[in-house]
Length: 134
Ligand SMILES: [Zn+2]
Image 1: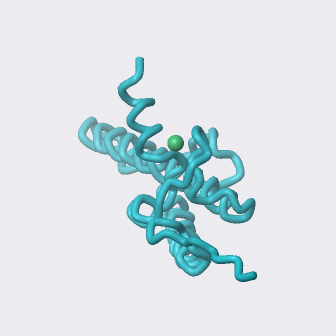
Image 2: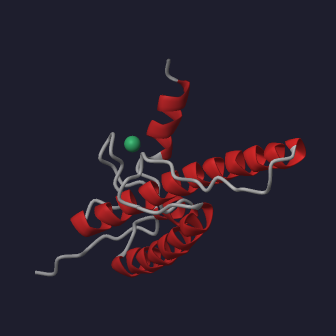
């Protein structure tokens, strides 16, 4: 008796997951470098914002520029940290073998969506419901 494995085109196969994982790891590496640039000292304390406060001088326009750049650093750091958290979560799901499965309904999210958005943890259906369902 032959057990036929029915893999639909939209199912994530091991090769694709492997490729996505490599991409995620590469992205993660880049984010860690970028975070260092904006002043992150300890990546293990994600809630502790440590963006660099630049020192240009004591003139009013210099002070204004310091604050403007600091604000940019904090914003950049926040975006990087959120992305890093998404990537880490996606990597965890790959390790656990739950990658590509919707966390709400348990159905396959679909290869197309996972390739377009590798950190997705919910299918489009659930995502749409969550966004519109108040
Ligand atoms: Zn779902």
